[in-house]
Image (cartoon, protein in one colour):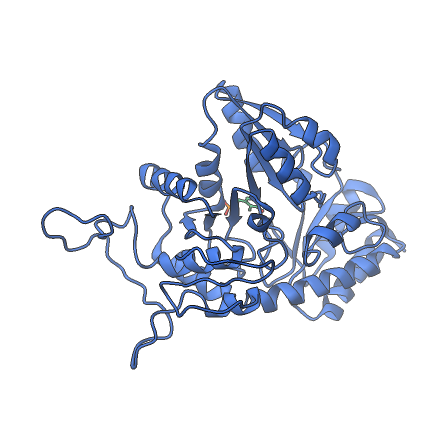
Length: 398
Ligand SMILES: *Cc1c(COP(=O)(O)O)cnc(C)c1O
């Protein structure tokens, strides 16, 4: 991919899978990127190639395909599309899961190095760095990522600053440009897990982040039918390192999964716009509801993350944190009393789902026991509200 200039919110890159495009909006890129060359009689979608190996003759050339653990044409359209969406000048790198993508980035921390992580973040990411620490591989510093000053103070001597924003499941919002700048001044690499925001809402590479990771499982694929991950960077050196890790460790994506993810990506803008609008409306109604003790969504004017989110994001995302009146028992009862909302882990699908996060003993103990993480989908908002309102009233007697 050529390293073309980009302006915030736009992408102008030449893609090997499509014509050079002028500055297109991300909503358009999601539809247009990763298409096969335009030839008469050719397909409009990239083909799925099912072959583990390639015909070869003699000494391989550097770009020649040899074996699909190292690379396959079935990954390339998706890798190209996610890179264009994030405004990256290098191709994306797809992995078998979000965790495999995260592992490839955490592997960059040198032995004896230091990683700074948000105290609230995806629990398996935190479990991963804790496991590294237990084996004396790295030192881990946990910060409140919404507290910019305290976070920056923890960057001194760090090798990697890991940011998630908004955080899972607390919805704290990080001041990305300020944090990235400070981390670089401290000599650290910065990686941002952009799963919650999606590149439609936040493009960390444009703020200078070195690496962006995604659980493609969530909004990018968008239909709760695939587990997949990706790493995106504008550094040739870092891209090479991530690709080499993937080939060595072998956590590669299957062809059907990548095909499903690219298919899902086509409607990313519509899904995210609708889900965000639904979430903002539901959060607004919840904030005045007699059955609600606390609601968190960055769209709410009095939310602690509202000011930063308004400044650094192009939207507020579609995840809501809800604590009903009545504590853990009420929270569990609300989940049981819902008919339309699906009780399930994971998020970012077209269907609205929710769960009480602390039902997992591995979830951070500073996450309130009664916090429901709600992934708002694309259903009619009145249907979602009617279901939620009846469940809350039934359980709390309001
Ligand atoms: C789900 C999730 C992950 C892990 O991704 P998998 O695809 O499940 O491996 C990482 N980060 C965040 C923020 C997530 O929500």
